[in-house]
Image (cartoon, rainbow, N blue to C red; front, side, top):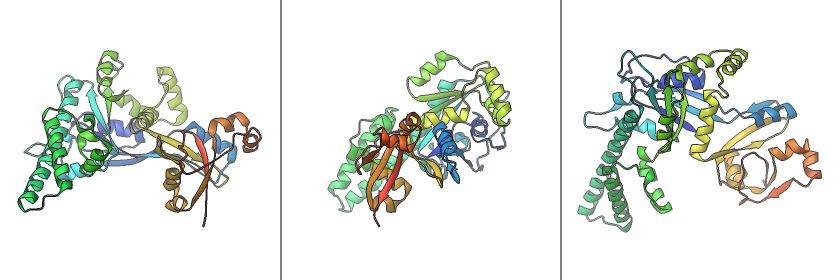
Length: 354
């Protein structure tokens, strides 16, 4: 899973990046157009994996991970014709979701924060970039038509892109369009920015933190989470014991990392299933609604090709029964076929042929 941190210059993206990843990327007052993205991989905190590790004492423990990418300030990547530079667009397109960092703190170099305006500013640039992409493709299709290469597939694509163009011109996002599954597949290759799942991170200082009226407005339109960025970054640099003590004193129940990963899973509709044993305890990320066959594919393509069945029980059942033996004695051990829909917290063992 890849999450891209996006936002206007000086919105505190790198501060949030450092808070999430415990990195020490330089935080500056001005963004550089030539700045390369900061990259880091974070583990997804999961008490289930921790508990299973205590039970099985494996040689290796592997938590699910999320790749965090901190892009340069978006204004620095905007071309003179509007829209984003092609290199920036290409990087953004590889993300599974975007986390839009919005400034909600006072800054010596900036005017008073205006989070709602900043959200609209970035979304407008997303729309312009998608419009440019749509118009360029429509021009190419018209050229093909003039050369006598009119096909039913191209005509359907043109009609769909005209609809997309109309909606973008109305300042609507592609992800808000009512598209059929076939239409979704037809435009999937474009990777429209306004089609990306979007999470708003409100980056507040202590004075502006927990203004519930503001968060209420934002959450009416978007998935959103609020961080006290500078404070969270300072906390991330403490050792575990000191951090826990400070968080308890300040009434912070979860780290920025935990809140971000939970929001990301909800936004993308992801769940985790688990594999256990003395060699390794591991969490695997799949989408809600995925089958046992797709879970096998996420482990290794060979398991999917030669899939026979999935031996399955839930983490909760294991905790209640105390052991795998107890699971079987109480009839909670199941054999599932390839079409079984995996649930969050399922513990799977895939049986496959040769």
